[in-house]
Length: 97
Image (tube, rainbow, N blue to C red; front, side):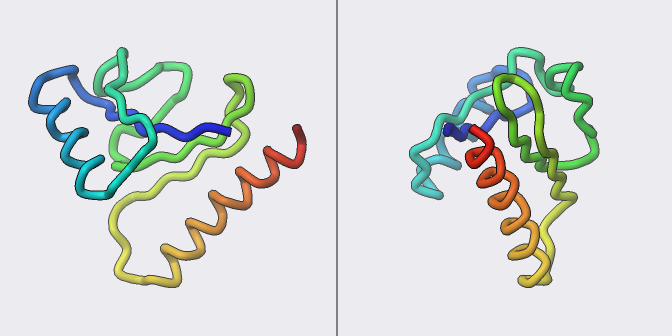
């Protein structure tokens, strides 16, 4: 199982610094990269450009679950439920392997 973060934007020094800052501030040890396809991301993923965060759960380049997070929610229960849904999808994927 692997996890990584992909920023959908141009590959610039400013964006590279943004990723380095995010990793440092959040003590992340997972890879953070910038998409080769730029802001729209891979066309085959059909990502919604208006959603700031999308989590994909995939097996061998096939998306098994897609979660969108439209923005910061003040409702902690909603955030916890969304996180549980992502983890449940990842666990299901692992169980099927």
